[in-house]
Image: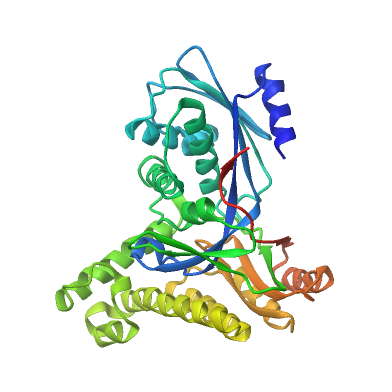
Length: 383
């Protein structure tokens, strides 16, 4: 991975990088859209991710190159979001802006080269991996100190304020705190992170529907707004609630007449997801893997019915996976509205079983699925 990044850097800039960093993509295991609602979420860093190489320049220019994308140049002293084909560099530009606001002294620009082993648009959060690899490499290059939680917060701020994506801390937090063969649990209200070992003999399979989603331009922002609208209504009767995650499903149902059908369903998805995260944590501690799987399927049903961020393609993949005896559970992973489904499986779920799922999906949706067998890996780090 790093060798190809060095080669890309040398071919484009004629020299070698000073610093390199890697940050992984992530799987959202359970806890869908709970993060920006102050709730609970579990994820896993994957072994695939983004490698970034960087070297200081002697002027104020920032130059970016990535395989398969047109190179982009920007000015260190004019950090504003770019549009069109250059918009892919808004992720590192945002990180640079926030790092400088946090006190990183950066008097000269830099050359940056990026390579990725992550599929784009598959709900594995290549954006957070891009941001964290940028933060780690630039902090090492320019002498800025922080920790995993600090870098996760800086990268989330960059995506919220510069890119314009109102995400919570899930993506950046899991990418920063990932640990081999472990799940990362996050209390998004307190931003407390902990890791929990995955049960032995369990695996992750990702089925990318190849139904692409662009979250900044999608219904993600609508769901964000609807959740806050639901909270505003509920706070009239329950003023102590700071977020939807401070409430229970029973409290939401009790005020359904005030909320109306749509906001009731949105709020029930969030309160239900928090309950499901707690049930998964307990089931994992007890070794109850069928119980974990049942919560995953229930999460997907809520995404389909209450949050309406699933699609016919994602539903078809989950239905096909449910027919496989070696699958504990499956659900959409990430923001939804396209993207991918995650399956939590026994060790005997293999490439032949995955091919059967993919064939069923193609027969129903006339589209090929991309299948990725991955495992929980380490979080962001310097190379």
